[in-house]
Length: 238
Figure 1 (cartoon, rainbow, N blue to C red):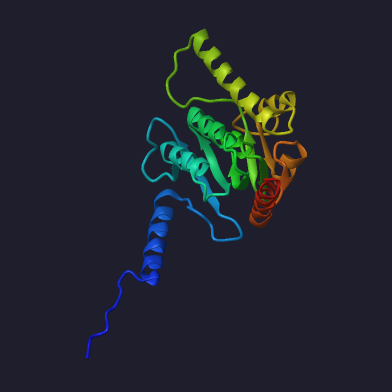
Figure 2 (figure 1 turned 135 degrees about the vertical axis):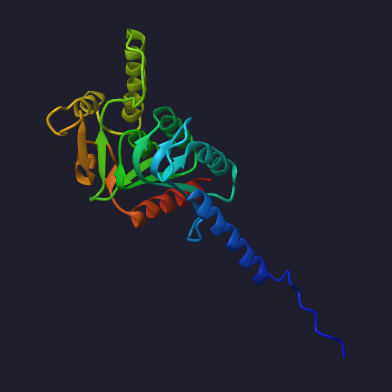
């Protein structure tokens, strides 16, 4: 009697291996390759401090921009990925890195949405408005303040002009990708009456929507429903 042969490459084994790889990817990058709902959505998280050219101190939760850039390229090129969901809970961080990521997200041609949970502060604001539709939960907050530098700087007019130019780029980006007037954004940014130790304004979810900074109040289900509708709308048009 012949012994029964077992196929170690059965679909079940392949599925287990794929799930293991996806779990490791999620733990390493904080992102999900493709969700398994009605449509394939790539979930990208921006949490903690946005790390730029200089490594953050040990013990800090960071989002490394050099890890996010290839993910965004893959999202745009992969035909199996139908949409992008960016979930933010960030204190801000490196200005140039954050603005670079915001520009990349805004350039994704597939349906995209951002969802602000907890906080979308500082340079997290351009990221929050970079997608085609932005959402925020009522309990989240967003801090608007001028560009700052924590290290040593040369006290010369050229340095001040550099900060002004960087602030103009941020303000212009936010204005182009949201409904808030540029003058109002600058007014909130330069407010001296709200923060004790700083210049600027803190907006909660409802205020952010009322000011036109974020498109609408909503949570995870609302953001996913928007993406599903946009994906299906594009499919029907094609």
